[in-house]
Length: 262
Image 1 (cartoon, one colour):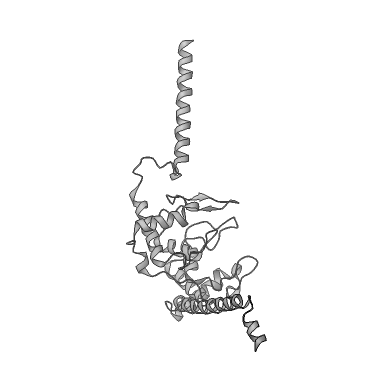
Image 2 (cartoon, one colour):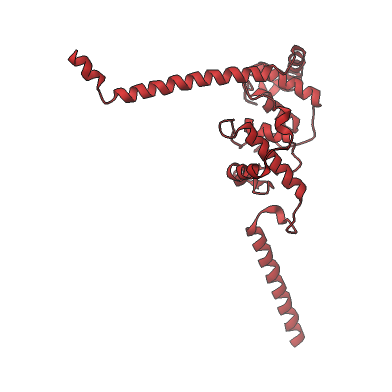
């Protein structure tokens, strides 16, 4: 009994119990999240949507993404990416890709809304993933002030504080968000396309995403009350413009004054 009591008092016993509790809690949370995502990803689509989407996928996407979207050397597996990822990539014209490059570019759409929905339904049926956003989260009636704070904290370092976009490394870039639909903004946040990180509901709540969309749509319609936007790059660009313009005026005046003197 004394030996057993000493083992229980071992200094590592508390740490072992803590780690065991964290593993069990994390496992249960992961299972619950996966089940909820699976339900959300498949309940919105009919069997006909999935069937027609499978036909479209086989004819247009399987060349790169493989039969059953299992992936190939030309394209990654799409199992588990969810309906939101397909709706974003196909609905913005980024997929199918026109050519290989640092990142997929927007271009004219190859599929209409119904076909895009069917492709999303098929991919969603292959594995749990982010679902299409609910309409109530896209009504642009959130808190714009809170959305602006969230955007500046999480997004402005790449997309610019005015959502005008910005350059990244190795030829990649964060696109300007003007004229981007609220639906695609939401889908980008939950799927993390290109270099963009994924903002799950634990990072930014659905209501927070709604606030960000409200903020972006507000600045999109408000124009530039301060005058010329100058690319919306902030005080550095504005200061550089003033410096170059002012220096040009001084040089021009100096040349004119010298010519008059001579």
